[in-house]
Length: 434
Image (tube, rainbow, N blue to C red; front, top):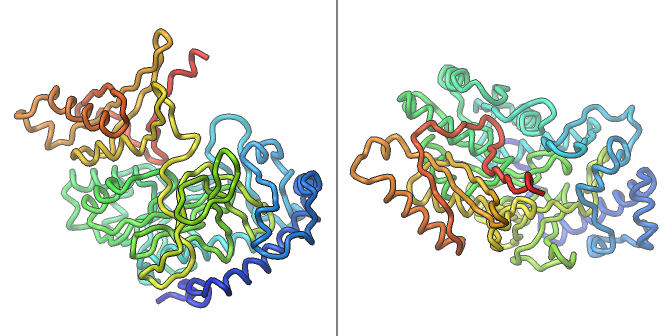
């Protein structure tokens, strides 16, 4: 197995891991207090000095920060080293307000590359693999992160970036790609294209590493079936470092958080109270090795839970379950909390592909929600089931899942625009009336 299964670290007993985390946390708190005015002032306001933080048990004494803090400090307010030591920036893909810009020293990039290398190895990758990276490159962290990890493992790396599906398929076939890295929605689109062209027997893919957007277990199964692979989840945020903060192993039973670099917490999103393992709440991360853009107790807004139950792969790092959604992705429609992942689960269970769109609107001060979903080619060719019957079955399934009536419109195949990056699933028109 590759050196990037770091057995000494990844299977470390919890007591030793806590000692390592404590040592790094103490050093990091001192670093940010001395080098980042924002943290210096925030800790002073909370009456906290670096010497008050002696171990991970003291983590909860530190104040939280959130994305608004990052935007307020744009561009240089959270940089923890001289700019002469920074070698790269990455940025979030947000379209409103100020962007979040994250800075990296060469040491930060080396750590990030190693984190992504561990993820590739956990998915079965070795130096003999061809790693096909079609996450976006540039400011988005997906492409650069998996590209760097692939190099660390020693894979032949195809830096395809996103889009141009015909070229993706040509290189996939001609160069024998074995590991696919992209968003799950684009993986679904590639699977659709491969099967339409009758290329499945010519494609050598064995595994896929998918992240950057929420996806359900139903979507995992659909992708695995269409591409003939094992699909692995990967998690990360630009604010923390990028993909590779956590990743799935062959057990596919939650993503191992790389606890030698990141300390996770689950909190009550309303009160900030730290919750025990196994309870669902908001995920919070503290970076304990990143120097250029070191975030302490960063509120991600992702809702999930942690578990330290023994994993069959032998890794001892805590696992985070697939986020059920982001607190800011949740829609309140007709007084009910609705996550797109709930709608996706119903559609995929009924045999539809992940080609759908959710339109939320408001008329006469009343909310409406419509789901537009494509027929599969097989469904379109089958005239024995009227569209009205298909729509009613989806309506009933969504009513059972959500508790409210959702309008459903079934459309012909290829009607909904395909995504080559992060999928745009929700169109909420209600803000037009605010």
